[in-house]
Length: 255
Ligand SMILES: NC(=O)c1ccc[n+]([C@@H]2O[C@H](COP(=O)([O-])OP(=O)(O)OC[C@H]3O[C@@H](n4cnc5c(N)ncnc54)[C@H](OP(=O)(O)O)[C@@H]3O)[C@@H](O)[C@H]2O)c1
Image (cartoon, rainbow, N blue to C red; front, side, top):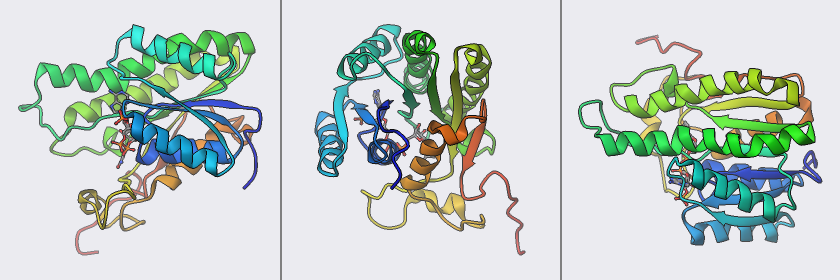
């Protein structure tokens, strides 16, 4: 594997499982010192151990991202302290996706989903951008979702948070362009968790797509690594669909 991130540092939120874990492992495998983060210390320690035993550098910083500026700021400060005061790559991956409908979602759920999926990345950006501005460089990668643009009869609340992250990706790209900060997003299709056995509940949402089924988290990690690397130096404010063709190709009944 190439070492595109030797000497670089990264914070990956929600990296105690599935997609975030794969991103943390990929960035570390390419040389980055990675902060693994989430609420679950046991799963966080396991990810750190896996990275270290593969020869990489990682540390765990626990955070329960409730959407408050204080919690995001505390995570930013603790991550910077563990990384020697410099962060090169921020991956806003932590996300929750309750399968509620508009009629069943209550106010607490609304606050929680917006707290983790939108407010936490917003205030992390606010906390970490000044250091990147001072360094004259930095990379932000947000996680979107295919459901931001292809609608289902449930999950409206979640879908709207991912649409917000697509918009923030473009808005931040414009706002921070002068400081050398590049901002992009990856929009996954249905991604199975290898920790769970067999075909997942989500596979039926991928029937008829060019990929024909759900993808693995490594596909998302590879896209994040590309966007984080200098190979993507001319890529700004884009949302890279890594979704098996879910949003780009129509499924035609009987064809
Ligand atoms: N899987 C898919 O099919 C799919 C498709 C499109 C987009 N996405 C997006 O991709 C991202 C990762 O999805 P995934 O499937 O890997 O999800 P996942 O397996 O459920 O993992 C979610 C991660 O977020 C963390 N997290 C949840 N609540 C948190 C909180 N309050 N504070 C801090 N961390 C929190 C979890 O860590 P702890 O449990 O340790 O707190 C976990 O590491 C999400 O943004 C999701 O919306 C996923």
